[in-house]
Image 1 (cartoon, rainbow, N blue to C red):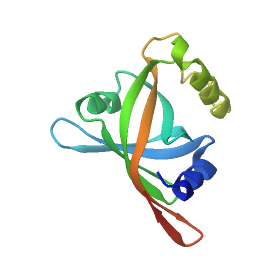
Image 2 (cartoon, rainbow, N blue to C red):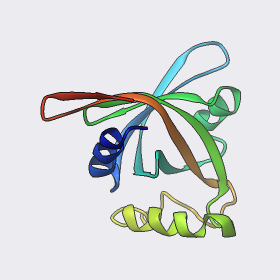
Image 3 (cartoon, rainbow, N blue to C red):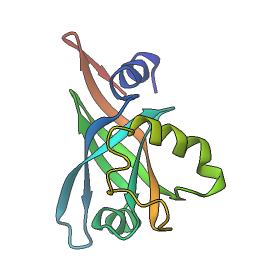
Image 4 (cartoon, rainbow, N blue to C red):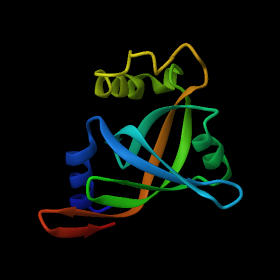
Length: 136
C-alpha cells in the first residue's frame, strides 16, 4: 500500500468510524451492512458475532467490498477469534477504547465465546482527499 493512501486511511479511520461491508451469500446475492470499525496497520477491525450472516458469507468467500467517507475498496476478511483470547488482548484493548461511547450498552457480550474480532485487510481501493484521487 502506498504511503499517501495509508496515511489518509489512518487520518480518517483510526478512531471509531462507520464503514459499510458488502458480502455475497452462497446464492450470489449481495448483502451490505454498516459497522463500527477502526483502521490500523493496513486493515479495518470490528467486533461482531460469529454466527451472523456476515460471518457465514465470509467463511464461504472472504473477499468483501468496503466503503466509507470518500473511500471504497476491497479486502480480505478473517476472524481473529474470541475477543478475550490472549493473542487478541492488545487489539481488544484498542477496540474497547475506540468504541467506549457505546461498548458497554449491552450490545457486546465479551463473556460469549462467539464475540469475535473481524479483520479486513485492505487489498485495493480509491480514496479522495482535497479533490485528489488516490489509488491502491
